[in-house]
Image 1 (cartoon, rainbow, N blue to C red):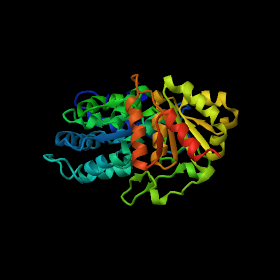
Image 2 (image 1 turned 120 degrees about the horizontal axis):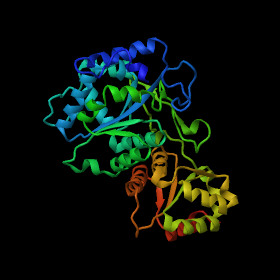
Image 3 (image 1 turned 120 degrees about the vertical axis):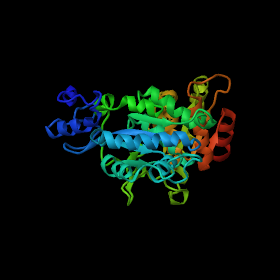
Image 4 (image 1 turned 60 degrees about the horizontal axis):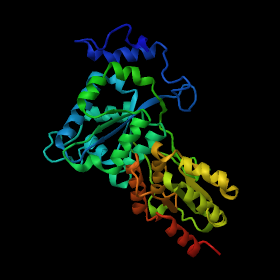
Length: 381
């Protein structure tokens, strides 16, 4: 990586504009980024790849909006060579405000979003993925991509003067970034300090195939668990979360169940799974669990062991993975044995699971008595 800075010092005073040129020259000389085993994530030899930056900004603060707009205009002008090696993943509202000037905050200066040359550069040279709006699961999906090791950096231009940044999905996203070593840059000053030297060094970090790969859920075999991104006419990529009317209804034994239990409730969940293993086996095609709970269930119940699929443990993002499946319409029932008496490091992730069930009209049972009564009334025969 030192070769990228050897012929010129793009970070020296008065020479910052040359950073992009130095990078492009090095690429042309034959240095390939991202083809070592730890940085490439699939794809064939010679395919282009990018390092992904997640971006979200508060819709309530005109100053933060202006900061991000001015920052992007500046980076495109000064460091196009470096910036073109990154792709951006915007939440839906941030995408509209920053790139197209739609529903910008009151009092902002840049009501039209970024300058036209900046927008064209981001769409054509960098690449842009647009997630759904915040209320439709956009921040949740951003957190899911962090857990899946698709996102390497997060620019979170949130405001501290309102409660928006304390929403459960935002807090869960920040916590998971720290757990999965995703660098968070919270303001324009931090990003400017990152460019160009650190950004140049970070280009090898967790490179992803481009055009972007599909969003897939490993718990489902075949096309039902794969959601291909679509490219819109303006050049940006869209992650399609199917609407309820577009989803194939699962009935009877096709349905999919999620089982989650806090530490002090895991023994009760194991007993529940043993007591009702016949009903669970006969009525569900797959049992999705967080890591520790799933391992215990597989050890205890041979009858449903082959149907159990394990995500990460809750604190490592397992709850977010399950919540994302819920939003995509892939889970029909959630049984979550909640411990209401002890604090949990991932409380906000837990709230996201609850919120996802509310959004998608998914049946959720939150204690053992309720779950046993439900199985006895609806599944036992």
